[in-house]
Length: 131
Ligand SMILES: [Zn+2]
Image (cartoon, rainbow, N blue to C red; front, side, top):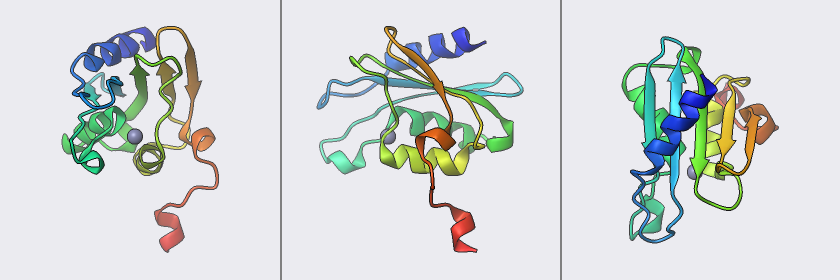
């Protein structure tokens, strides 16, 4: 199943709109019912309006009514020389929208790593802090 999710993420990477960075990211969210949601980075000349690939994919899943309990894993891939470690904004989003132990698979075809949001964002700020 991980191979399928990675293949779909690399396929999604082909849809990246990255005329400024030329750094292409694809992502695939696999839900427990087998449904997949793809995302790619979509840049903008006003850089702050850019959306990362993994946020595109997880927002698509949530937009279709899926929630963290429904998500089996997420793959995030790039064509960079290093693994596509999520940026700080994405870590904050994934921290809220994924269970703490949901597998996050990173790959650039040369390297592969499986991690979790707990590992990527220790001592995180969350809604629990607002209680
Ligand atoms: Zn990001």
